[in-house]
Length: 159
Image 1 (spheres, rainbow, N blue to C red):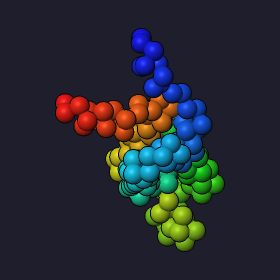
Image 2: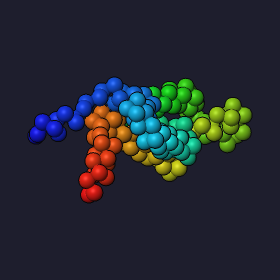
Image 3: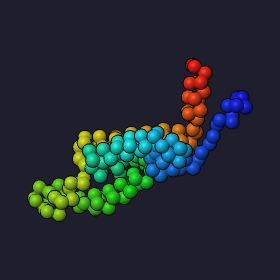
Image 4: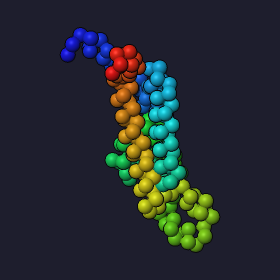
């Protein structure tokens, strides 16, 4: 590797940590505001859509551990959603289906949080894809490639 190539390499763990704490924040820290806001919109829209589609139960570290590992790459937002799931949905009684059919108002009020069937699976998938997309953004923030300098150099050389 040549000396000029090494001088352009950077390792920015602070940007990577910020990118995990809030999607897009690592790029904003590096001065790439547009890219940061695009990452932020994409990851949060995908994760939020997953929660809206599959319910709050689509983020669950107890029943769906492998899926949660991918979802956790979205940052603390996935952990907070999982904590809300554990506090709201998991305390439901085991006989909630029977009580729902009987018309129990307590179960009917809470059942809106529980995702059932394939819709819940789609929400889980959306959240996992958002986490994997954020992993790519974290790696991009960890090793920035100096796109602006390279584009300016190409523009000036006419390539």
